Amino acid sequence: MNKHDSERICGMLESLGASAVDSIDECDIVIYLTCCVREAADVRLYGQASSIKNVPLRKGSPLKTRILAIGGCIGQRDSDKLKSIVGNVDVVFGTHNIGHLPALLEDSIENGKTVVEVLEESSGFPTDLPTHREKPWAAWLPITIGCNNFCSYCIVPYVRGREKSRTMEDIVEEAIKYKSEGVLELTLLGQNVNSYGRDLYGDSKFYDLLCKIDELGFARLRFATSHPKDISDDVIKAFGSLKSLQPALHLPVQSGSDRILKEMNRKYTADYYLGLIGKLRSARPDVALSTDIIVGFPGETQEDFVATYKLVDKVKYHQVFTFIYSKREGTPAAKIVDNTPKDLIQKRFDSLVELVADRANELNQQDLNSTMDVLFEGASKKDANVLVGKSPKNQTVHVELGNKKASDFTGKILPVKISEAKTWYLKGDLLAV
Ligand code: 5AD
Ligand code: SF4
Image (tube, rainbow, N blue to C red; front, side, top):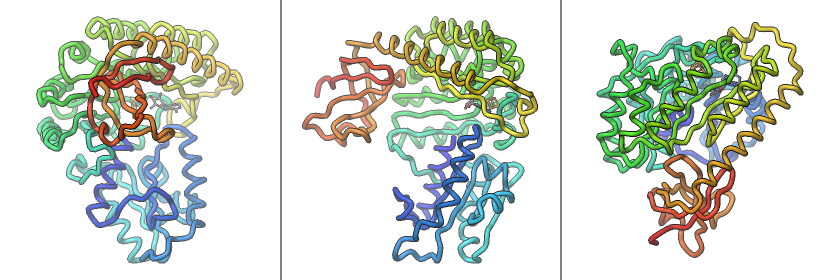
């Protein structure tokens, strides 16, 4: 969601004559679009933002001093307080008013003052803002904003507000525009896409929406994120019936212990979750699964952790995003007293990460010698001789370029024969080139 919001901010400022640059020394305005889901992101912002004005302004800048804007979730949460925490901030904005950013910047520059605007709620869905897509062949399409779930550890509902859906007509219209612009891969976005439409239509219309978008004929359709309590049988079956829907699903489980799931207010059990996985694999046997896990939720016992470990072992995920629990003030979980030693939590975390890597490697080995369509994204940042792309299952695929040029393949979907399988990527050769 933040990546998409950044694309909107770039689009807005570019339409006013600004352009994005790669380094701090080259820029006149720095905008931090922040996240406060875990503490590490907070700490990083404060460290960087406080030192940014020490970097000299580029020669020829029309400004007297570099402008620093901080917005998104931390802006929403801290609002005026940011002025004392980050003394040199010029503009503070929240999650509901990114469309006002150009006006706020202008006000700060013209009047030489710090401008703070944080709204309680957004007046509508920010759909009419220009977007600069980072990858011309891929587009994010937000279908809901906010979240009503209040998982006990999570700050998102407090900084992103209640769930609001966009009308189906509006979404389809934007999708049609992307199709006409040559977008190959469309990703529908929301904190919980499965409850799409409840506020507008009384009931979730996510399956209907998927069918409508599928008819538009994108090469690849994806969505994120799903809540296990809300994913319906229709949506599960769609993985077997909709042509453009790719065989990859991110289904955050958070924990394998029913006791912890209850404490987390997740509203499902481990068995229910495993039942969903069974149904998904019947609908689409080759579906690749990914998940989020929190290790060290307050009061997590060895028994609770073992339940999580066993669930991960059983499901066999292609990718697991593992997080150590981070206390977020204002959430119900922050009030739970926990005396679990930090090194024990770290040990549990490390053992889970090891298991995840083993399972991911085993799964990737199954694709050895197969041929798959790869959407190429360009040369690797680490090695200019390697072309990088994504498989339908969202695996990273590497192809040696040899004497070929990366730009000839970027933004194209081409068949690749897999010759080597590693834990986090596959290697292969382009066919028919
Ligand atoms: N501590 C650790 N991880 C968290 N997440 C959300 N809140 C916290 C927290 N307080 C994780 C969840 C969620 C992902 C986006 O971030 O796993 O699915
Ligand atoms: Fe946070 Fe839960 Fe909402 Fe996801 S569903 S954003 S974890 S409250």
